[in-house]
Image (tube, rainbow, N blue to C red):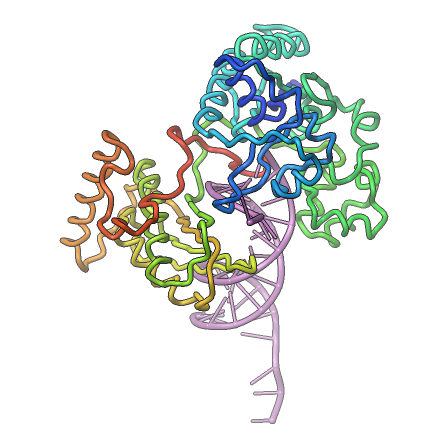
Length: 416
DNA sequence: TCTGGGGTCCTAGGACCC
DNA sequence: TCTGGGGTCCTAGGACCC
């Protein structure tokens, strides 16, 4: 069988590069990429973390996910710009459309990462390395930002290759290069080795990817269960997963929010849950799907996190029905403490062909369906907040919270 | 005025059934 | 008076990714 050729394309400091590019194209003379700068949220509304950093900012040991407060301690002159997700979605889309010219098999792994299966395209476009340079140059010239491209025989190695040296680089990671290029890397640079697994591996003397590769696979499996076996395979460059196109079924839809202040009042918490449920249900209906599982999550002011879920008899997409369950779930677990963060999620999605009537209240459900449909179409035409629930008037709360932009494409559909 | 949001997958323990 | 074990479903929580 023919060896597969897989590309992994990764935008360098994505949010920051896109922000920099946009600003340059709109008359700014300052390139954010050349100074210590970050894209970050607003601490006033308690969203103050780093979402992306420039390479000069990285030199101050500023890390993605850390607080702006701590970043400013490290670098007082740090330039902070707010995120603009709509712009990022657009940038992601144009890059995707360029990649689609080179293969029909392109998988969007996240907003700034794609896998391309180049195997069938080789006869048409030729040498993978040359084509990768061609893609990289086109993105730079036509779109204004740089990418890293990894080339290998499977997705895992392509992804590892694209992480090797940044920015604006192309690397291969073929089987004969694994030892040289990958095994000497520290173990936490391996995909799927995170902060909890790192100490467990260090405990048994595994410090590099090579150490793990040479360890015993069965031992790893008994030590860390299926995850141990997975990362042992990864360390050895083994991965058979396929580059998948867009039609992957999504498993769940959720939205959550950190409130500007801690909420201790049940009525207020209910309103926030309603605004989240509104968004989740709109997305659900937009997908033409029904949900069987409903869950809520709470993070209190001590950052303690807990959740509660229930399964319902007949799958639904009704905002009213889902919100009723959400309220009940909340009352069942809330410990009357101040709440920092609330989330609503639905899962066990199915298509409408599986819809079963529930005997009770069929008339009421039908009414709900008509209302949802009308509200959705008004919002689609006149904007999200053109029609809102009366309860939000003068509440000081946003009537709809969350969302993932216009196009809902699948991301992170599985491990790889 | 320090700590986001959106996902997927796995596991442990309890309930329940035969 | 002894106290099985396999299977499935459900739930909560945790690990990982970007």
